[in-house]
Length: 291
Length: 294
Picture 1 (cartoon, one colour):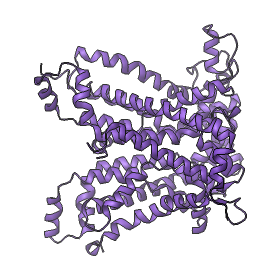
Picture 2 (cartoon, chains in turn blue, red):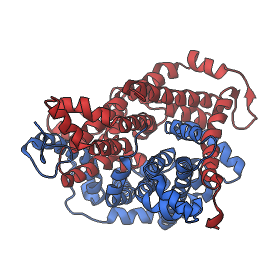
Picture 3 (cartoon, one colour):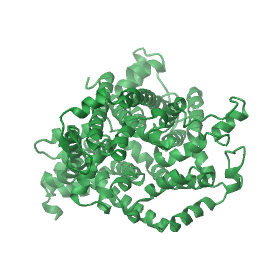
Picture 4 (cartoon, helix red, strand yellow):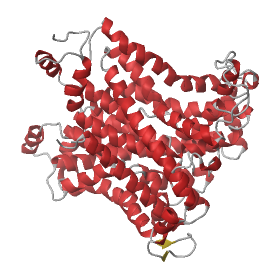
């Protein structure tokens, strides 16, 4: 009984047998989506609806009040909202760029260059996939302090750009590119760096996009660097501001709308980026296996 | 400039210097500090394995609350999240691309939310008075007669932490497994049906799982690590460290409690080492179960 177009894996058309899967997937997806719908609705609720009893899930008269209130409160505290936003944009964009560059360089080195100890380095990196940064916050603080970069943007960027998962994913992806491509470029007189820049980077662009997304998520949402390495409020990030805001105002009902608005502002860029790049991510993940 | 860059050092050094600075050295320092008394003001003083002995024999909260909580949390969230990721990835692979993409984005999106900011949303939903959304619904439907203090009562806090963590557990591992199922060579299935496989269950065990083993291993490591990283959620939900009656206290919170609240940094480092060892052990055990390099 050979399979055909509608019943196999990755089918091209609808078939009755798929209904079982839809019957499971759709209710579960709706359940998973509820909390996110809740934030969206809550963020646009006017004060009267936030106080309403019994509380309603959906917003009736959407308003931007919570968002404008958010900006007003932060400028009242001396540091304008835009300052946190610019800090975050700057740190995230430089961080993502650095994360991609250093992981891709190292991945090419470990995949295609020949030198002693490269197997060992890759093993160490695979081990580091299990690394939980939260466990070594104290020693990391000591390292950052010794480097003299407390209260600088470097303290935001350097610790978070080391992403073993990213290095792992790009390395597995580069492994798939044929060596002949590199050999023929060498015959034409290209250096390793030229090969990396002109041949490898375009080929592994899906993996680079994936790492870009993972780095963006990690850096954009990160609050630990602002908490531990930064004491100057004007150098802290949007994520940190949102965290301190939601934990302080989130407890009273009027502040809930603002907390929801803040959560939404943090969530949307992640979602948009993923939606646009998801096909590249799926392409990369196909090579993510630990062999 | 590019023309002369041939040496492996150009490629290897940037990443590995930072890797040493922020992963290797901190782990080594944590191990070193774990044998000292260190209050962050005076220099660390060597005290041998005292911290570890105290952790095991004198720290009642660690042995009675933190360790059991962490093990319970990890054993529920890890395997269930992992199985759910696999099951959902496999089901998504059985439907055409357009609906699959939409559903995959929905299932993945919880892991895109920021844990701490999300905690304030959960606090609204699980709020302890009649105005809390869950309480209000349950009262309305007549399930309960008076509002429940979900986040402040020990018997609910842990369960809510588990639900919230499972909600956001469809992360990178889930995507890897989805890609893994989709990339299995179709002809294998046809060959298997000719050889006498009869249904989808046999398909899963004889072809799908063996074929996507590498992605499943990757997913397993991600599940274990993700579980421990999500562990801070109890403090964010209940709004206090320690959590009410230590009901939601996990190792991660215990480290923060001793390291940043009590400044017992040597002791906190000993707990860190235990945490890293625990993650490593669990990852290895999972890999053994899934059959490494067969």
